[in-house]
Image 1 (tube, rainbow, N blue to C red):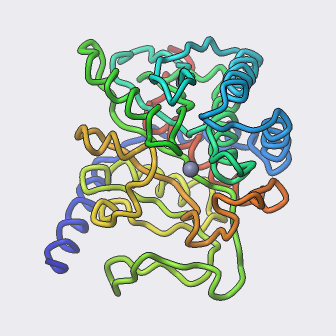
Image 2: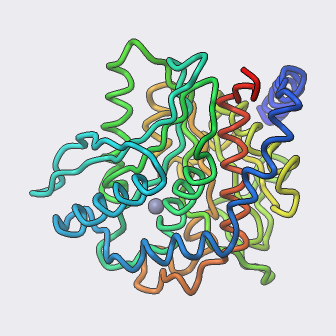
Length: 327
Ligand SMILES: [Zn+2]
């Protein structure tokens, strides 16, 4: 079983490496584009988000205020948004906030990037998941004026903490629409906690050669199930090409075997046979503030967060393609 898994992953890795054909013009366009994402821009983004108050899905006032905040921020970046019904949580209507850059040559193919905006009720949620929301907003900011071949869709998911309600509603909507094909989701789920202390990284399980997380929490985890591996390869390749200062640990095909890796908004995608990759600092296996009142902005590492977001922006450009300048 182990050997088979390894051989299969290597075989697919080689195939996908051979097939990756990103035009040189696209590759050269990416570094200046992602350079707009900096530790300072990420800190400013998260500071403003945190300053607008709590984001508990069970609180109607907070949920509405958060949606309005995200609408205003995306409008300031030049995007039209719409709210997507995500049902009720108790007495509170839930909505995802969606924006797109429509593809110019294959608009029906959709490449999604998302993060949940809600928090557990007692936590300020700076890392969980203010960091992911910051990542999506910073990618949206960096891609202003970008002309993709395929459609890029930004998704701010509601009510993740109370049963993945927003992403589940979104996937149900995807399955209803026959005119488009969603190629997958890049899910930013806690991307701001970093430590160089020895033994700062825990793990649900460590299996030598298959899945053995390092013991220092100074890397980003790329987690996917078997069919999402090629999407994970794009993210990891983008780190190698554009953000070499970022360490990563690849679980981009095998994470589907571990229950802990299915605890975010990519999980409904997996259940619907859609691709999904979770980009994460591994939550409570590293961050002791997880779901606590201490999950505050002071604990977030903005050099780390900005690098993760830079790689995410580069991934969206490579994945969705780029219309040549003189087209
Ligand atoms: Zn979360």
